[in-house]
Amino acid sequence: MPLRVIEIITPNEDKDDVYKTLEKHRPDEGYVFWVSSNEGGSSLTFRVILDVKESENVLDRLENFFTWKDVYRIIVFPVEATIPRLKSIEEETEDSEEAKEKKKQLKNRLSREELYADVLDTSVLSRSYILLIIFSSIVAVIGLLKNNVAIIIGAMVLAPLLGPNVGLSLATTLGDDDLSKASSKTLVTGILLAFAITFVAGIFINVDVGEPSSELMMRAYTDFSDIILAIVSGAAGIISFTLGVPTSLVGVMVALSLLPPLSACGLFLGAGHIHYAIGAATLFFANIICLNLSGVVTFLLMGVQPLAWWKREQVKVTALRITGVWGVLLAILSALLFFDMLK
Image (cartoon, rainbow, N blue to C red; front, side, top):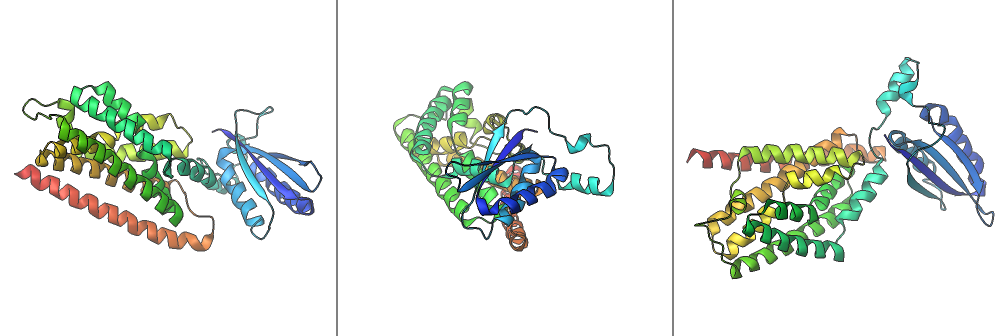
């Protein structure tokens, strides 16, 4: 796992309290730290180097400590390496009950704050997001009509539709209404914009279903393998995201295709092929449902939860309810697919 530096900027009068807190837990957490005075002498900077799996425990403790403070700042930086190496809990020879309990408490993922910051970058509506939706929609139309897999994959990688869905899942597990609203707004805007572009393209471009593009027609049908793929890909994407492996998300974007079926729906509907448009829309919404369902469940299994203890139970109930809603929608969709196969 990678390393992190936690930088704590605090007034001089808090030096002893912060130092005692860090020193008290240093042997258990296995981090190193030092303190320096800032320019002007009115504040101090504590720097803590630790393993990323320890970062959430330390950040939670610091946040609880500073809850009643007016002036403080905590910043987290990624670190490539440190010499000498930090002592890892796995390297300890002790096999005491305390050591075993400590291992259970480790979070083998990025901290809650890092996850939130990464998700926020892709969940807020911005000019770059709108431009990427426009460009990726045009690329998707060209790829589908030319029956070119490489162009379609390029559209998948360009399209930023995965980010808002991850934001919705994280907002559910953290009980963050602001993140939920921002992600929903961004996702709906992206869907409507992509659909509008492809719908207009379908009006002016001849979409021949007599001699169709195989890539286009593949998006006009949904079966149970698509549902399984969406669930597995969504869970794999969330795990990669919590481990801080952004390159893995490219593979998830390709496996869990959101833009191609949406683009196919717009093309079919614009050309007047309503039956095929419904099929493409079904595939798109199946991917959305499966992604959000697997996202919420995976975040919960990875131990992502709010800091405040009183909020955890409340959020857990809400998360289970929302998971139930996604589950019911998936069950309805599966039933429709089953009856359609019987015809």
